[in-house]
Length: 235
Picture 1 (cartoon, rainbow, N blue to C red):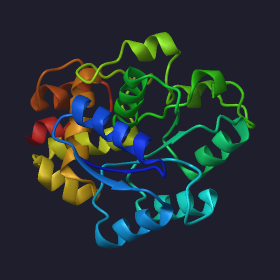
Picture 2: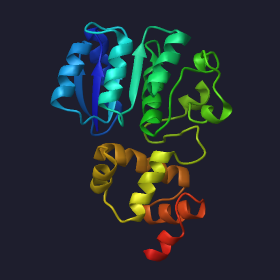
Picture 3: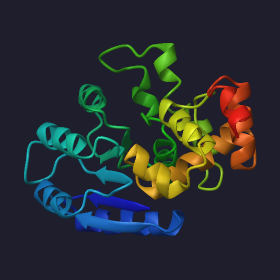
């Protein structure tokens, strides 16, 4: 799994890198200390599974910079880790397409849990800000967001939970690819994802469908109406 992290405070950057190395498996981290550094990195490599960045950094206006990062990596989730705890700024990041907003005061456990949620296709919003965004969040939309803090703290790197009861559109696409007999590498190529992202999605798919392997996932997905029964008869 390839992660790009950015913060203009070297101590925090090194600390975040240590937390990720200690809690995530097979992680390859690229560091940056400004938006200028980020764009330099992205010119050389756009193959990242996740971007984690501070908000206020040298090199660009944060709103323009985050928008550009999202446009450059439209399929890559972006998480903001910031000391700025403002509901209007949070709303702006959500409007851009950011998948998570973590306060710098968060515990290591919360940070890793929120990252796992985002990698699983969810969106993390601090519980304190969940109901105070500028635009009210509908109950349907809230299903994509993290549950209250107690639920979040139960999440571990080996037991990822999402607030959604079903599969996301991206996960359904992956199940369809599995039903076609595609390997993780082939799925990644077809859906323009990295192989690491596909692996994370499949882990969550198996958990949501409560099955242990890919074949069982296809059968259960058909039962729940995510894919056509015709796929089963063709296999």
